[in-house]
Length: 89
Image (cartoon, rainbow, N blue to C red; front, side, top):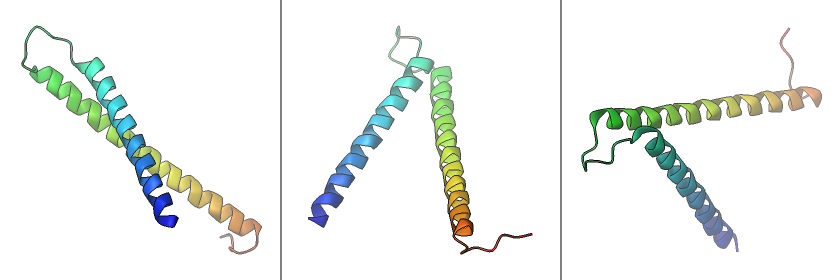
């Protein structure tokens, strides 16, 4: 049963990844690709798409770090409240 839960969690996680990837792709495409008169991708479209992706990755990394910091603070506060952690003076 645990193997099924793990497989189910992996499928759910993969679906979430695909949803995020599709949304990111759509957003960057809509923001960056403007010329449909040629099959070639213009350099400014390529540059815009790369910047869009970099911005998203940096934002995601920053949110993740802030989320971790928040949970560390919350855990320290709970430990201090329970008397398990000595607060520095």
